[in-house]
Length: 385
Image (tube, rainbow, N blue to C red):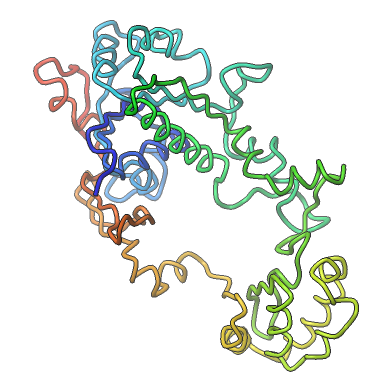
């Protein structure tokens, strides 16, 4: 099942947010044509690890696409770009605001006479406003949006989330918006120019933190793995390391206490409600970790699982990817790179009616599809590897 089959997307993007968005659309069956500069292409192509010269990072965000190379400052190549856009349902770009306008490829220029065109611009701060001209990367947007202020241990230096959530969260928002706009077009409506900003998406994903500020007037603080309104709900130290446990309501809290033979804690007035446990979670943490010090992570996980209390080991990616649930769902699949090297990749985690979304095109070599899309008019300077 490919719900976006028949939709053509022209992607003018590099690195993360835009390519991730385009890959989500490609996974759903859209024909994504990635337009790259002939001088090296998407800069992520140079990111290690390299497998026989091909970037595995690039491969993870660019499966199921075709690649062409165009120098958008060259009149002949610009004409080819306009022809591609003329064949498209969707144009996706993640350049700094103003770049596409200078090239004559902005929405106002290419959308004239195309009421059904969906044009999505991803940028750091948005297409207008006092910061619109500023550049940004995932790190700086996590810093600017408040994400770093609530990440890490209290009193420690600020750290970013280890996963680039500003990049990928914005890509998700953009893909969702594009799909919604396509539905509107299919229903007989008009397309749209979608303005997806990393700053806005990062703030929106912080809904619990912004609502805490609006409701209390106080800035949320770093709590490490703990939760501001729930306990016990964090990583705990055991005899041989750390594990996570989330007794997120009164019933689960009582079950967790019973699992370790501490029914008395369920009756302790300091911990009689979710709000009180959150308020006194420092005391609760100290009590629990004293008991956990004599037990291994495996023992504690077994006890809490038997009691129905959500818990988990603190996995690295090697362990996470080896989990039997990953194998059962078929989320890790073999992948052949354009270099001919064999590797593996994590595919779309979604299923429609029990069916997942396959890899039907390998991540492309730079300019691999020039001849396929341009024929005899293929750019002379295009690379095929």
